[in-house]
Image (cartoon, rainbow, N blue to C red):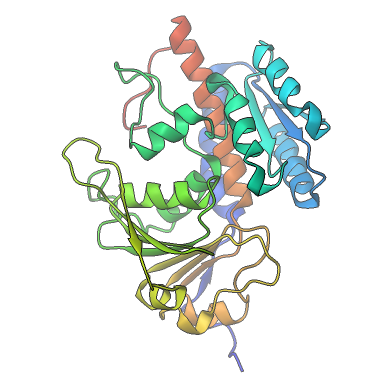
Length: 326
């Protein structure tokens, strides 16, 4: 029987982490002096997506952004996105996935429909290419910052807040010596997250139904991209005892991370809308537990939206480039 929550386990809520990011966003918005418009497309009838969309609207309204939720039939999503791309009053577009069956590949097509200049989620080909290649800018002059996918970036911001990142070390090396397990290798969250963590110096066990891949930092001098190593025979049970951080995002209400295999003092983070950790048992093992990251994801979404607006102003010559390390 699990004991009462030990004093050594700290439960950190997403709202607490999001406060600093939203303060940064409000400061940027005040300097901008206008009200960027974010359009959300809901085409899947998923209750979790509806809740997420409603919270997007609430957060936008509370922080000085305009938000328009458009519920559309999936057959019409293509034209709706094309129209929003052409609408100069729209500054950012978010689409709530999944829309089509995973095996169809149609969601990937929809992601690439969103224009680069309006893709707040960072899921179009250009942004994913840059992320996987560890390229931070869109131009050779290093003035237009590339956009990172919202949920993976939200996890990074959570890890930074928890000081898992070592800020004394240089960029690209701040997770040196850390071993992290990511349970989920979806193209929207799990795989990009593993790549980002590896690019920052971590050894990452990427776990999914088809087995375990190991992501590590690649070789090279300038912005080396991550390397992926196929690992035959390795299972989740082999990874958990070795991991400083366990991050899970399995979209299944029945799934639970086997806490008995998690090392004492590990950091446990859940990014699924379902609770992947037993909320009592995890507190007996983890030093830090983050039960959800949704509020951080939306804060990152608004941060990305501001970045898109700034990129547009730089192109037009009405805004100076942001510092490279910001």
